[in-house]
Amino acid sequence: MSMFDLSGKVALVTGGGRGLGRGMALALAEAGADVVVTSRNEAELDESVRQLGAYPGDPLAVPADLSAPEGPEQVVAAVGEQRGPIDVMVHAAGLQVRKPALELSLEEWDRVQSVHLRAAFSLSQTIGRDMIDRGSGGSIILVSSLTANIGIRNTSAYGAAKSGIEGLMRTLAAEWATHGVRVNAVTPGFFHTELTDAMFQDEQRREWMLGRIPMGRAGTPEDLAGAAVFLASDASAYVTGQAIAVDGGWLAA
Image (tube, rainbow, N blue to C red; front, side, top):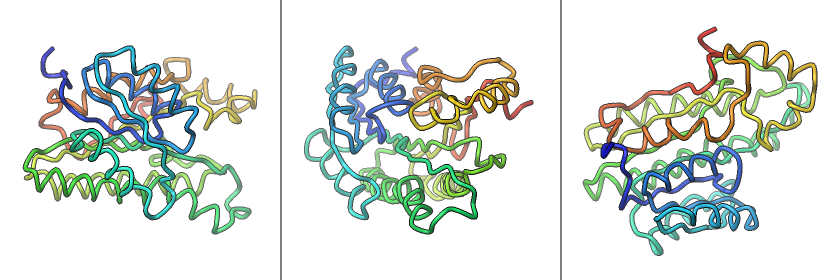
């Protein structure tokens, strides 16, 4: 199992204060990584650090607003000062605005794009440049969505951002492969988190959703653990430019 070992690696997880980000952060810590979590909510980050403390690594919280133009570079600089170069980056930060496209404002559109897509590019560019300059290689993992593959009503900004995530992932993978920098994505299906709670509270939509999942249940943050560790570790040394669906069979059906 040594190929899955992340001991001595520094892993940055955005959106690591809750939900899918916290779940993947815990998985990387269990595999041995020194995990740094970032989000805007300091109380949530403190709870993540408390849970990460159950593992041997050296967890750290860096509060930041990734929607701010300078946010991503500030996070990377803070991690470098306190933990050293980043070996693994997981961009799980996100927000959702559920509205019909005709009612969505440009301000709401821009806010969704800034956290999901612009931050993904800025983080990847900054971290990828350092990985290439050091000659160390590394792993960048972006979080996609079913909305990059299918149309789901009232999610136009989110779907556009996640479609962009997968396009960005493929382009960076092609550009950086010769430098040993791997860029992949995980594509969660329907997971019950704070971001999706409103949908789960709608009984009709919940039943429709569960009826479309061959495994018959929604995902949990723990369901992403294996994919995150696989893509972060040497177990996926020859894998780049791929989006791995963790969706209970939704897209297959």
